[in-house]
Image 1: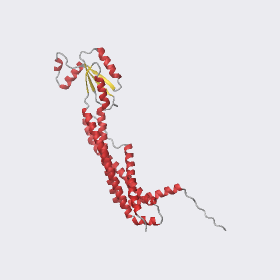
Image 2: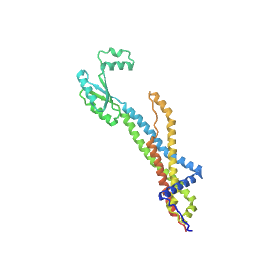
Image 3: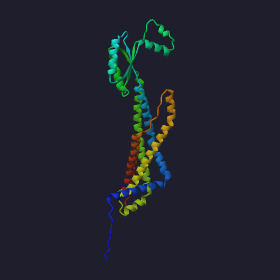
Image 4: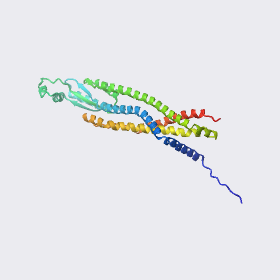
Length: 315
């Protein structure tokens, strides 16, 4: 009687997936064997990533607030004395046709004098003047989508209208704030690069120490014909896990910071009669953070492991 042997050929793709799953489990096992050291490494990586991100979040919120001030800025157009109704009508028509103008409001000299009396507390004495020294004013509200440069261009354009004597808008403080924000963004970018290098060094040093602890195991695997890719794979996943969990730690720290600052910021906004909810990292920035952490972990572990593996040769 002939014995028939049946063998099932496992697809190559399934074998690859199995190898990667085994490497991931091996990496998790290595991390679980020293939980406190792993947790400390995660925390250090998270703090290193959170510091520049915190500055970035603060700058982003300041920029949002400054943009709202910028959008609410108004241009005061002072009219010529004794302007006719027809000239006033033509000026308002030209203003409303401008794409940068959201709305315009005419304040007559009489209305301006009454407003001045109410705001200054003169109690009617200003109305006893023989002649009204105040000119008519058109208050122009720019479109909210305009930036500082576009508002300045609108101001220059409106000041050239025939019936306008003076066009006034104070944007100097906003320009200074934008310049400070530009410096802040450069600083945040520089800190991000510096701390990214620090994270690379932290993960690379941690993986290097791990490979040294597994020196004999790596040597045995090489003796029985294990490839460098097979040896390298668990350590690469360890680096990826360090970067991933460190990025999650950073996200949590920034989120805690935003929640910690929300109450005083809400109180400050209420003093100005406004409401403001502090913005966090956002979905896209969070995804960039996690992807960047994974990439840093992969690069650091690759550099640390590859060099060490090539130095180990069985005799």
